[in-house]
Length: 447
Image (cartoon, rainbow, N blue to C red; front, side, top):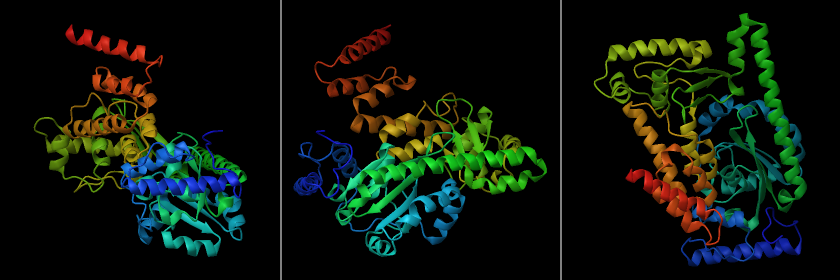
């Protein structure tokens, strides 16, 4: 295979040659002042593309340590409420316990690349502290460049990164294998499971082991949810206690993209919101510190907003949320959400921030509450749409650009289609359809 997806067998001549060529790539990158050349011989394509993303995100290969994203108290609270906490016993049994004397570390991170748990060989743990491979550190591509956890999240696929293939030079003595963890119900990325260590961390059997562990953990999370649902259904008098015990099983979410009425999911229960309640939660979810009544009115109503009208809407919204979870009822003075609520628009922005354009496009189902005229919603809608379009134009593949062109907001986007033509080979059969689309746009705009 000319450009393998996985690194060669550890200890082989091919593995040694890959390391030599990766180091040559770093030397060439230095000569270009962190520009990444296209023609590094022998560097795997997915690694070269990850280096290019890392450079564009301004990750620094010469900074030895990863940044710390959460202090101890923040980390403990975040882990306690995260859905992955529920399945850690499975990961500990299948990966962590066998790794204690094997020279390997097991790390579990969230969907934006922050490590939540790091365990395994005690000696390796102490060594890894030198590069801040510790719980609470940010190992996304945007922060540390190419690594198995960050790149697995950027591509939403299993990844193995060997030695000098890492973007950060302090990580060259290490190798790692990582597999994304998906929500068993929604399919959304919840986090990543990683094994880090010496060459054995990128053996073929290591990848199979991590993938099998993730599959088992996803199945266990699904079982936990079904068990909770049955307990709530069969013993309604214990509803409040069951809801509390199940908080960590779900990621509270708000689906806003491509729909006029949002879907709100809290503690595994989902409800369709009215248009006005959708607008209120869209705005509040983008302002976690909260908003005053005056600020919320200004963002909610196109003309002069009425505080009386707002209070009436908030009373009705609180009743809706009360049915889902009493703990999630919005507070006042300021108006704010007491629980973390992940909007799909926020997922898109997070993916764009870490260079995961393809995943962002998969999540993006269209404009945010497209019929809403609320000033705060319009501003958020335009921001998400603009950033996605700009990211795709600057660094998107032909397939990603063509998929974006199918969205209603791109129906008359001439620049987008011209960008596709520049990327397509002269003899590509796809060119005819793009040219025909440009002719269609010209005809309709003249009509």
